[in-house]
Amino acid sequence: MQDIGNIIDNRVLLVALIACLMAQALKLVVHIIKHRKLDISVLFTTGGMPSAHSALVTALATGVGQSIGWASPEFAVAMVFAIIVMYDAAGVRQAAGKQARILNQMVDELFHEHPEFNQDRLKELLGHTPFQVIAGSALGITISWLARAAY
Image 1 (tube, rainbow, N blue to C red):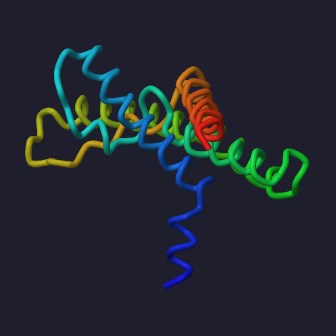
Image 2 (tube, rainbow, N blue to C red):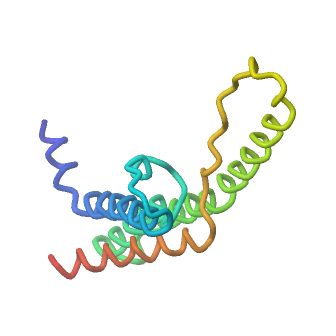
């Protein structure tokens, strides 16, 4: 039971999760401004502005650097992890989203005469633009620095 208490008391982890949740909340705000309607499902989807993945991993890396030291091996691991996650969000998952969009279009065009072919559509909004990743990263770093200043 003590281990669970230690996890809950981990300030670096808590700040990283708060950064992720704030990014998801901002996605809802951006969606409301852009589409002029409330869609709570935006809180539970991937993709969009800002990148919650980027906010999470940059807040984590920043927190590790602040707590243990910028020259520590732990910061190096957190930083490499952040770079991989952000590269994946803007690269691989973005490409998968584009492929899903094209496949959905192909299915729509090829099978519009056959309504019995009722296939679920692929999720198209999977990744992020580089700007969305940078915005998420800036949010994560800012939240980590603000949390550090508050303690």
